[in-house]
Length: 428
Image (tube, rainbow, N blue to C red):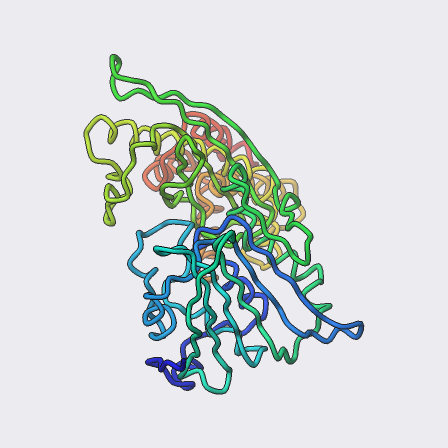
């Protein structure tokens, strides 16, 4: 049975569909997880020459409800998922682009789905690349003794070789895109398989830490225990940087931006927080305007605010440790190579001046790595020049109160900076 959509080929082509096959495959995997799947299998059927006959992406999710087809397939850039709650890792697709993305490298896409409505039913949907303004739907039929789920089969594959989908580049991309999500659900049996091989992401984990915190709303109030699992990844991941909040069943109920989402350094991190504190959480409690008001009720708000404060302090320490051990040397070398530092001679005095300026810049960069981010090069040279001149005067101690007005300093940070601000006559 042919059904019309509210789209044209031109509207699809101008809508920003993926231009990379890796992103297309990822779209279909996310569609499976959106449908509450725990397992997604990618099967590439090809011959000995690498010619791909078809690509199948199957999941064990809830299937596609027949009555939602007019939204999920009939309206482009529209979807029943668009009205779902914000900031949930389980609902990624918002505008329904994924179902049409096959047209980058395939002539048709065929969905076979099994869904539980009043009874267990199955039916088939087909979209052809050359006539995306229509989709074909079969009659639904009753089935027994089968599990719900969906398989999308991409046929008529062109411009794509099986070696590409089996390459290290492809596997690494999938690990980067989904590793954080598989880790989030590692206790719930979530898995992605490519031609039968389970997707592994362990090589992306650079550092881990596991802690347990007990927090109280008041001295006499109930206590709540939080298991905090910190991951630092060695490269960018397929999500922003969040605190993922999980209930006692270890399922995410919400996620909150960590506030360390800046591009100044490569501090790629995720924090997974598990507690029965989140068992009574209702999605309606989410405040779109403020993550601080995630819960209703004063007692839980106090605990939640304290938790966020502890998490911020914890990540701040982790970030500063990472900067001190990894990022600061790279940044100082970059400033010197690009000629941002003042010109120094080879005298002992000049060498000492340079040493002190670099040491001070190191402390400032550790305190706030965004200090030079987005600043014009001429301004950076000017700032460093003035800082170098001020360090040579008897007023160099005034640098500390200036920094204190710009950044919140810990006692240790204040002490280290004080030690650098030596009197001018010690430089001569």
